[in-house]
Amino acid sequence: MAADLVSHPGFFRANRIAKLSVSEIIKISTRARELRAEGHPVIILGAGEPDFDTPDHVKQAGIAAIEAGQTKYTPLDGTPELKKAICDKLARENGLTYQPANISVSAGAKQVLFNAFMATINPGDEVIIPTPFWTTYADIVEVCGGVPVLVQCPGEKGFRLQPDQLEAAITPKTKWLMLNSPSNPSGAAYSADEMMPLLNVLKRNPHVWLVSDDIYEHITYDDFKFVTPAQLAPELQSRILLVNGVSKSHAMTGWRIGFGAGPVELIKAMAVMQSQSTSCASSVSQAAAIEALNGDNSFLEERRLSFQERRDLVVAGLNEIEGVTCRVPEGAFYTFASCEGLIGKKTPSGKTIESDSDFCRYILEESHVAIVPGSAFGLSPYFRISYAAAKTELVEAISRIQKAVSALA
Image 1 (tube, rainbow, N blue to C red):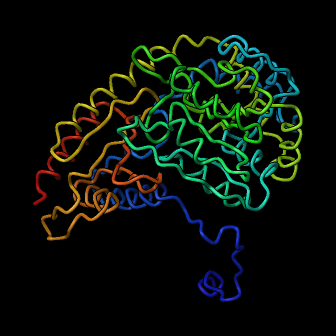
Image 2: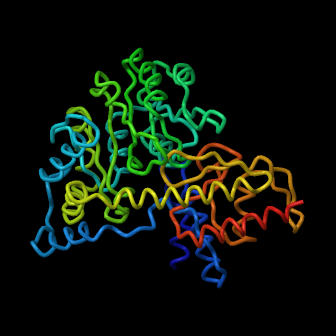
Image 3: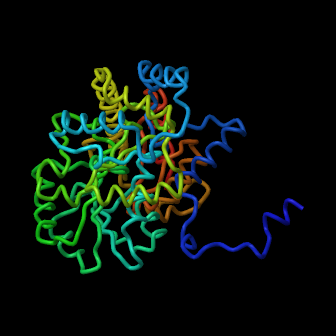
């Protein structure tokens, strides 16, 4: 009976998700876990989360909230205390002035994006997405009835959108530009000098709004200085949605807290969407997020340096592999390396590597290292490695990849 229910011919799949499926990242992770269950020593480098633990003082704030009975519904899109902490953070760290009415708190940054696009996109509206991009961006746009306009930004351009590309992509139907700096999957980031020309294009096109996904704000390297668009162009602040959270900076992915800062009418519209989906975010998580924003953040520098050390290790190891080239990312915890030089080669079993997906499948099955093909992020032939893993694992993974590539004919 259960099997009949699973495959029931009368099941109706909505048109809005007809072209969507479980992400390639999840598929790869599932296969990796299967191999582990079979006893293989699989190293998974696909996770988009820090390998650090949530800081103790933040965990204690969550525990204190539970013990104080803060386990009921909160105001729909964030407690007053958390909204104030977010406003204070934006003023202190980014030089931006927002009021609590400009703030929306959701169950993760992904929900902030979903609420915003559901509240603003009509069928046929276009959203410009520099590619490679985090897979969720395009899928959310399609679910909302919009049209993702993917603009390829290859490695030779630093994986960054160029002003002439943006100008050419804008049409009367364009509703949003989506920027993510530092970026998942490439780790590329826009300096003030690189971002300002894009903002000048937006100034000439007042019908286009901007989403700035700043979730990796605190994970940048060397002398790179993070900047968010409203800092550079205050006159655009009334049509910018800033998206951020505590997931990456404070290793709080499972706590599910993200926030948006934008014009009041947009925030109100997003609240309408949230009221009919999740309602408020977790009360306990919100209490912990207040401590994350207001408390001691001295640990961020130590963790940033740890990620930088691992970045350097992975980039150097990949660039030693013939047929692989890897750009040094400015931030986040990913490398996005080209495997173009391996396309057309044959595996020991005689199979031809025809794509980055073939390459990643080969590495997983033969070397038991899980990496993600660039095709999952809209740009081939590349592959993404998350170096948010132990150094010993990274060293072993690079060694396995080097050995597997050397076996290609």
